[in-house]
Image (cartoon, rainbow, N blue to C red; front, side, top):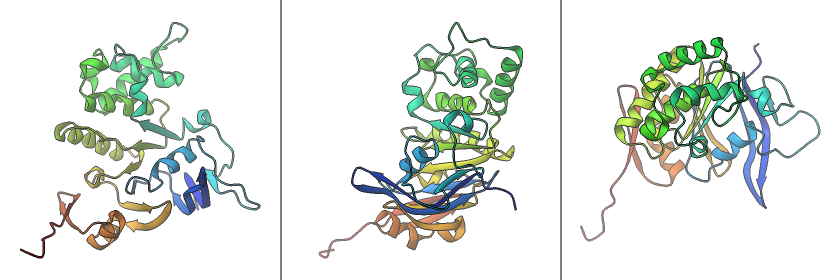
Length: 269
């Protein structure tokens, strides 16, 4: 049996006096496409920060609560060849005139932008060009991020996460604040990436972000595992109504799921 990429075993993480994750057990395999869905405050951000070592689970005797490829101890630099992390926060730290090419190349140095002491090799240039072609963003190579749409800039950030050829990419709320067209382009890039064999781990509260290639969905609620399984059995009206605390109707079109809230009628109607 192959070693899982990510493994949580009864992991508990506190935030002040509150349980942000409460005894979470889950396993994600190498190359698997998974969505982690939940409302605000469900523990999604804490789950990501536990993987990236920004937060730590409670210690206990015996088996470790979190492993990455079977390893109990790792740091963010060990993680780079295994898991590319795509966060919207990264763009907020970028200088406005960084180009798409420079943004992607910065991934080789784990830096925010390129600096004079960074030596970009021909092999790095070749890899960056291949990534831009793979994500259909070659036209953004010489464009600064302030000239890009939000969706274009986020696709470049995905490219940056690919420079070390990771086994999977972790996308944290990738479509937040994007308009319909930009969100659609971003999902197209996610689909291209999934078809290459790179694992997709999507963390979101937007149902349409779950691209057709994602077959497994994990639901989190109040820091606990609420459901885990094939998306057809997890993304039901009953489960999503309970998850979000509102009666919803679930529809599926062209492999995408959509949920809309039932309109409530007053008693006088």
